[in-house]
Length: 438
Ligand code: ATP
Ligand code: MG
Ligand code: MG
Ligand code: MG
Image (cartoon, rainbow, N blue to C red; front, side, top):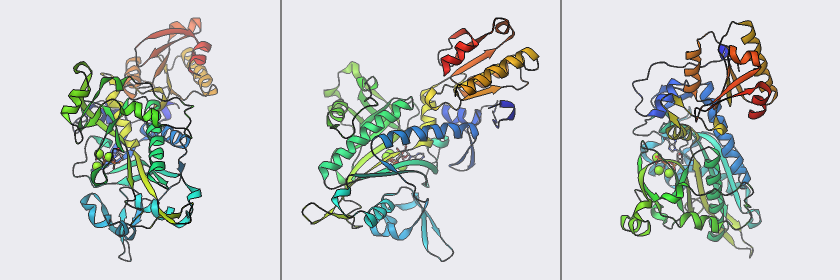
């Protein structure tokens, strides 16, 4: 992408309305624009990041055996009357009437709709286990939308729903999602710790929130420091095998959110030097809820003995539009965003220090072309701006590698690479630089 032809509305001023660093940086770097309270457009650079986050989530869901589909954003109130949630949900639900005065709503979540799809088609235990998911916009009329897309009213959610014959197999489905979430956040370049979360009237211990530690997080959290360093299950983890030992290993170390914490247990189980008491951002939530929806909505299958069985369900959410600011909270410096390579809008930016100089232009063009041929997602700063402004834009938008084409290197056929994260610089022959990024 040539920056001179791109749409990147960078702001030099710090926007006053933004209270936390990720919100400020998302506005300054031209990632998002607020359209109304809690509603945002994703501008081109931000949209690239959001789509990379979404793709990683989908890959790890697919790997775990979940199957993607797409349900609509608007739903009929009648489905929600079946589960009893139409009245129970309260003011967070945006209620709408169509031209025929039928009650509709903008979905805040999809348990009812997926249960309806399930009961329509699935009739036998032989079709289980089944896990269906989608990535779709949700609307929740939050009392206090704030912090940009961290807590917005319209937001993107990946929500998966598992269906099983009994509790024992539902627990296995839960374990698959637990492991898939560990791998997802690892690939997104963040440390997200699974913490015991409230299960409400359902009880049991099968609810975990995945939490990224950050001072600006909305909830207080308590955990064992070793969870921050724990190795993540490998890419070849067999999701058809027994994942209980992995989950047991992770959950053996204390970790709970403020709603669940028992300070006595925290202090008894975790040696003082290992106690982390911090603030955190909920980026994911997994939950087993048994027959809460399947029973009232009559989602049953025929069991092996020919009898009707009400299926056991769980749901599993991740908010990609919250993950983006959470990554920034965890990864930035004075100069701007520091994207993990996996979600960076562009992997590299070619900075032409002397735009307008024939040799410098030719060398930059050539490098940019070679990067494209090598399959590297590159941005080329071919604008007329001075070197200082180009560096500050590159730092602000957080591109992992800056390839600096200056008059000195030109003579020797070399280019300087600056690593955004470490600030480290090295000078390499052009071919070697391209090879490095391939
Ligand atoms: P919170 O406690 O922050 O209100 P929640 O517990 O209501 O979130 P869930 O119903 O568990 O959210 O939804 C699953 C995921 O969707 C959350 O873990 C979060 O990543 C995301 N999410 C929920 N509400 C919002 C929101 N208002 N804006 C952006 N993302 C959200
Ligand atoms: Mg909420
Ligand atoms: Mg919550
Ligand atoms: Mg939650």
